[in-house]
Length: 374
Length: 165
Image (cartoon, rainbow over all chains, first blue to last red; front, side, top):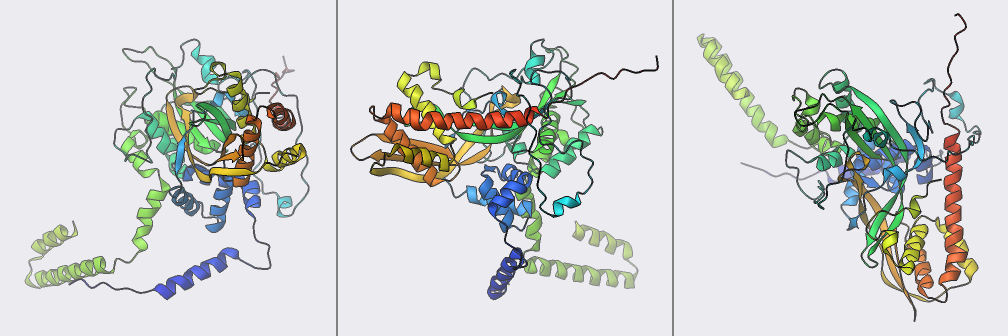
């Protein structure tokens, strides 16, 4: 017999009202503005945009405010919002080589055209809490230097000249670009679909997997060939006009990992690359993404698949934190009937167990309960 | 200083376009990146306030953003960006378009209106000189200021000379 029950409407309404009150916090403290969140918690906003897969700092700030700073909940809100909007079309691929650079470092070449530009980095800070930030002390203006006239060439372009590194060239034919928001995942994926999934993947998950490759689970000897952060122009062909125009700019972080490759029958030894491209200033995520991208190229490069980070189905199926949280958190929802059935089963097994012990046939009872548990 | 706004790579590469189309491409690109207060201030200074009819929008939607594998290879989707599009017609005049990232309907509508005004051959040069050129110069100045701040964080390596031998 299945009996549907209904209830909790008043409890839910009151819980949401309580949530709204707790979200606001102490009413004698001014409410946060979206400008404050977007301006002063900018890297949290960037993370929500990246994993929410929607570039809109104002909306991401709103999502963070609404979620009380729970970034995965904020990502969820952005993902839900994007489903309500029509898609106007596809941009031309952005040109990260023409980025207006805010930070650019290479761990492989000391002197490279354009130089090592540290930008607004946490690197080399002492990680000591700064009590001054508890107040609103005036901040010194940034120092201005003289901008170099030379173009900041990509490190991969510098190495490519000698054939020391694999070259990434667009193929001649205009093949379809994978879109995991339109087509269900089907393994094995192309590298385009994989990168799309990694770009929106959970930073913590990708960081842990990237770390695992460094610790020896699919070691690939990575170097941070180049990391660059800055704004790129978004161009799009307007059908009314028939030509591309710039429709605005987005801030991106790009990471090129350079990895060893021993070569194959067809290809002489050369460096290979892993690629990361993420919304906003998100260096750790871009690096983790590049490590995972390289590890997931194992099959393509003829390497043995021995580690979790190389297992495409494992990595991509578990990298999306909205999917992950949905399945984990659904466990909170009422499972009263499921559990009632389990309860019945355990009671029956216990009764059989007791009966078997009483008759000294414990071995058989143990087998039966093992079967039931499976 | 690099100017991505003037480096367009997609179909409709500047060299393949007529001078008028190239001018419009540049105009729309400058307007798309201009902050609303500045755009509005320069527009008000022109004294041009035509009656307009909105043909489409303003409509909020998404643009799928693409990158290239390794920066130069096959395209892939990085994610989406919010965008707003609007098409206006000046009563008895030209049609103007705007497509901008973000969800600022007022900014999109003003950009489309300025585009429509500039489509009138009698006003093209005025809009160019009084609105587009100043906005472009301001954008270049913002980039130059950012470039100078970043340049101050450039690492200058020097070699340590050891004194013990």
